[in-house]
Image (cartoon, rainbow, N blue to C red; front, side, top):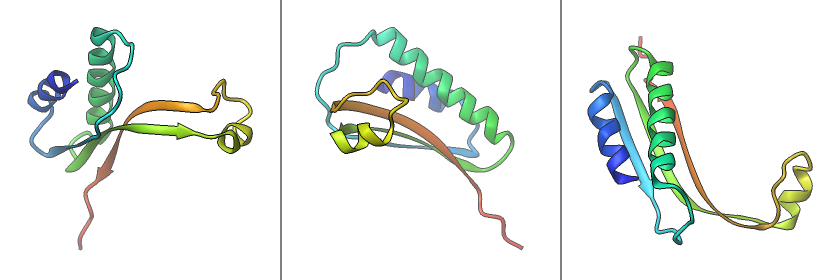
Length: 98
């Protein structure tokens, strides 16, 4: 994952800051190449969505505990109560000053 973030940093313009919050998470059974591709694809999509703006692309990895109440309030989801490793990113456009 860190290799993908390094590659992403070298790919996006300097106007976009990449912020990471990578918590210690349990080992997961996953295809490392697929995870690398997902990070690159999501990061590239976020970069393109920001276009020429100044912004922050945040990559966060943490443990996400889904309890029965959460699962009940999301009946369409195929989730079940258990612990997941959550990885997400988002953009925050620059503040406009006048």
